[in-house]
Image (cartoon, rainbow, N blue to C red):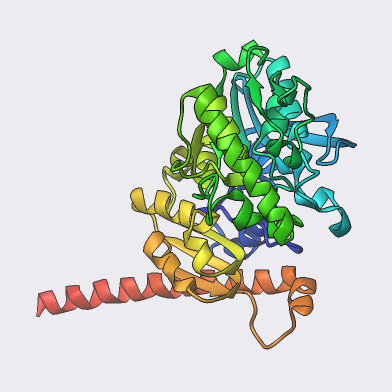
Length: 393
């Protein structure tokens, strides 16, 4: 009996990870009636990560009221898992989707709400905390998060600052004496695939600031503050983060969580696969099917398909990807354990049509995939028979 494992990312705007597993199961059993199918929700450390991990591990979601990027109340959820583990998405509290386009301004935004989520997890007794830091609306260096966890942000006159992006330029000292003592006994993993440093042309401000609402003048202002912050981190923590990859992630939150709080920066998808015990799930599997809405050169850069493909390849298990469409560099994914790609779009159509027909198109692609697999198995049997015939003469 064939055993299939389905581990696909969501198709943004149309199909969830669970939807793809259900459609794959339907198609697989049409072609291989006695097969065994297992679907595991997954994400790469971005949107949907906490829910996917909670679903896969039999955990649950905890919802609390925290501050959004503009210090307004917002309901934010994080995953709680067996074994005193928690998975937090900073975007749930400090993410760009929480703001209207006109509200986007990294001078005004803060990671304070993310710190509140971490504090709540500590208060609930969770000691193994993973924080996914994609999708931020912030460029505050993570000082808002630190303030929510008990740090004091002081200007040259000893006045306490709120922890917004604009406060970096006024920040004169970072008082860490009041940090939540429970942090010392907690293990903090930072789920991050961004390699940007904190400052400079490839730093947090100039790389990500424009998409968060910063114009040229604001970028210069923010970078001046970030340089001050970088020097202050070295003075306060004894660590020079000017060359540390990942510290510029999420507008510098990567620096606060790693340099100040001692967290470990790790690939998002690799962390997720560890959290859902993916290696153990591979045991006895004959084929893994993964996928995403669009596959291009970025897919090989720490996304779901690359992580799943590499892990499965290490176990000697073939992987097929089913994708909505292919872009430039899509075939790069074949260097990361994925053996073949199948697209759902089967004729010229607009994006709106493809999204509207997503279930129908995906099911059709799944059927084609399994029929192709069946043909491959028949070819292998035919080759074996021919070799046996030739051996007998």
